[in-house]
Length: 478
Image 1 (tube, rainbow, N blue to C red):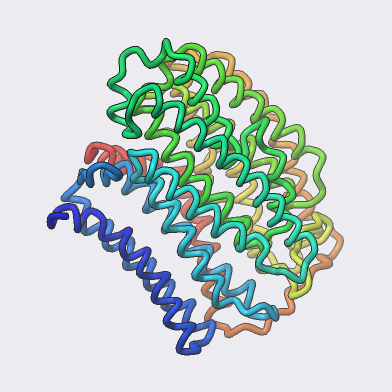
Image 2 (image 1 turned 90 degrees about the vertical axis):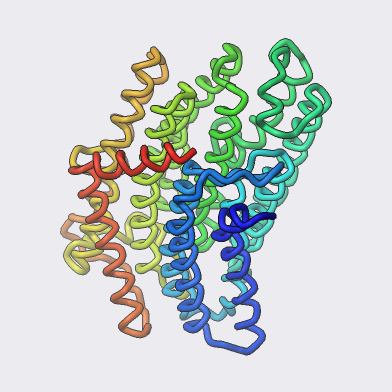
């Protein structure tokens, strides 16, 4: 490895070192607060390292990795999300009996797996990153082992993820058998690949595995139970970091081998996107549990995101990155409120617990209101600009059916988001109590962070060109 490659991998090596540092802190019996602060600082160092190496990009580490502007964007979004999840984790676990120290090892290892996916250009690195992400998630989902639904959710995810890993490996094997390579670039150079039944079958099996990780219809059956059973910070991690990592490798793989040029696969992905948008919104309409509602909502939003994937061009990549940014900020803000309102015995899941929240905690109610408006795609929020960019991308390439379904289902989604908002502003007093006895600094830091996230949603919604231009600058580095 030469100096350029070392600098290219520096942010990812720092992510790996963060897990080792946490292990050492646990060995020296450091407190939860010390581990949280050190972990936060390590994530800040990773972001600084990625900013430092940006002028050296792209860097190819043959044959497994490529660190370019595309990877920098997705990795930065992942680490940003983990910073917020880490803060929510401290608030969430501080009062619980479960020792949260090992939690941060799993959190950083899972983050490393997601980050590896963003730089993968080979099936081996793809699989290693995906399994590192998934294996850590098994334990994170079931971390509150005293809760029956947490263990059930962990086992369900474990069994289904193990099965889909088999699909993924079998699909990779078929593609390797047909092309003689596991490198995305080399696979793309095989001009006769689309006429091969084993190759098409391999792609289909990989679509099953990736569809499971993204909770796309019809591979979504695990989403609601896992979202409900997992601790709220872990749920926010699954909804953001996990989805960002998997979607980034799907996008890179699709662009590398030009998946969208195959008519059959284009129809398949279009059908998946349409089914996800319709089923996600219909299922969300029936929910009175806010975590399950956000789970089905995430299925719909991944369907919207797939519309940006379908064109397979730079405009689609820009729209996808912007949409993921807006979606991640919104989901982190929403689950931040769920975390703050959760007690030591149970999460604040029931929608009735939020009735009259504006009267008792107006800041929380306003944060959740803006988050719901952004998810609904209401103007002056980042969510609106994200949907508009996805719509524009689809219209330019003539994807009229997916675009039409996106518009109709977005209108459907407004209903259940407004139902949450009206619940917050009803006259009945909120029946939820936090019962927190945390250090005022961390409590205020969490409040401030959530307010900053909401301000970001509005600023990005009003001045989107600033973000769009930065996205384009990073993509030019590739």
